[in-house]
Image (cartoon, rainbow, N blue to C red; front, top):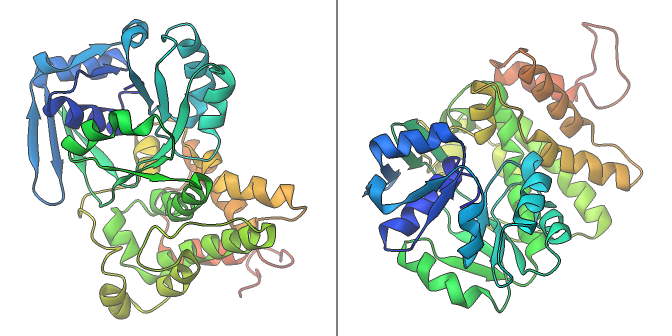
Amino acid sequence: MFGAGSIGCYLGGRLAATGAEVTLIGRERVGAEIRDHGLRLTDLHGSDIRVAASDIAFDTGPESAATADLVVVSVKSAGTPEVGATLASAIGPGTVVVSAQNGLGNADTLRAALPGHVVLAAMVPFNVVHRGDGHFHQGSEGDLEIEQHPAVPAFAPVFADAGLPLHPHDDFRSVQWAKLLLNLNNPVNALSGLPLREELSRRPFRRALALAQREALALLAARGIAVAKLTPLPPQWIPRLLTVPDGVFRVAGSRMLAIDPHARSSMWDDLEACRRTEVDWISGEIVRLAEASGTAAPVNARLVALIREAEAGGNRQWSGDALLADLRSQWGPRKPAGKRQRN
């Protein structure tokens, strides 16, 4: 597991708990925490799995990757080029590499660095929260999705044994776009300062997310880009569901609210830890799609700007009404302060 953050430690720990030989590669502070406490892996359904420190190896360098059959990359997207260069001189000729990262282009970046290797894109749909002392908690639902390839059956049983079944897809790009549409809530959640379930329970925040999703869906439709159906509702219907009154949403959107009450987005975690976020690989993807289409994505561009401001110490406690009004003001001609257009 190259990248021992919340996702890397959770996936690696689940695999190690069922007997897989796993090495986590990450920062020394994480290694020290695991050596002191081992791993505790819980989820919203009550699972509580312990992995002793002696049952999982930890390295700060890539040397152990030389003998790996499979390398799962779970670093932040900004670190992908460096990881690709590192793996190019570290792994053996038969090693399969899987990118379990946000965004659309990380697997392509790794393929460019590793032309002689099988590199596959994967998607982790659930949220993982680091609660300290080696405790990582899965706060939402979902199974792992992966690009279809003849290499997958060799390691799929190991993941299934760990309770992490892999679902292969021929058109994986459509899966990535579907995940990205859902991830457009990450900046909204980070700016709200609220746990995910509480944020999604409030209509103004949902309406802000719906604005970002509608803008993205219009661009995708104009380019003829397919979007996979990862939820009971087709992706095109989700913005409409998001805008219904709170009481209706508690019933109609109950599956979206099936989240641990303490779970937050990884973008909120990054802001809390004063790390640069992955907003360029989430809302920024929509901005780049618009630029490639010769148009603009003002709502998603504004979310990028607001997250950049938050990274620099700006507002991270937006009310739903204020955030919605700010995003709505991006449409149409800009007005003088205090006279912005509302739609």
